[in-house]
Length: 111
Ligand code: FES
Image (tube, rainbow, N blue to C red; front, side):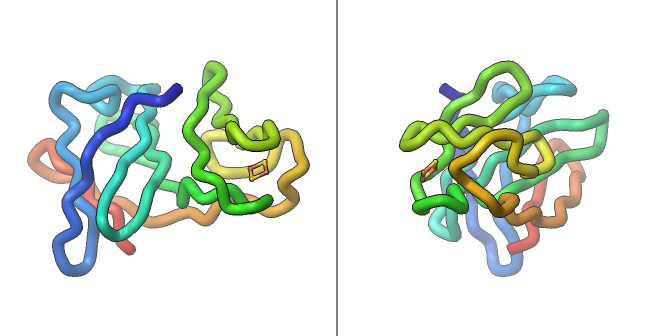
């Protein structure tokens, strides 16, 4: 299971404070829950993040599992890469990517 981190929806983006979360470390990943949706967020570098829609493209379960660097859907076992590509079905379509920015310890997911 991925750790769950709260996101704060503020107008044009969902803001996530990285301190004290798995996103504090390069290679870390977390499930970000917000009123604007649920996202899979991973840290790719000191200032780089990858944000994906956590809604499985198969039957819309929330992708909450992790197996190493692979995201796993709990419903029927679809597996996705950290960039949202399908590694194993039944899902066929990739997870949607969102742009991110990072400043002052806060990641903003552009939604
Ligand atoms: S809803 Fe995710 S694998 Fe079916």
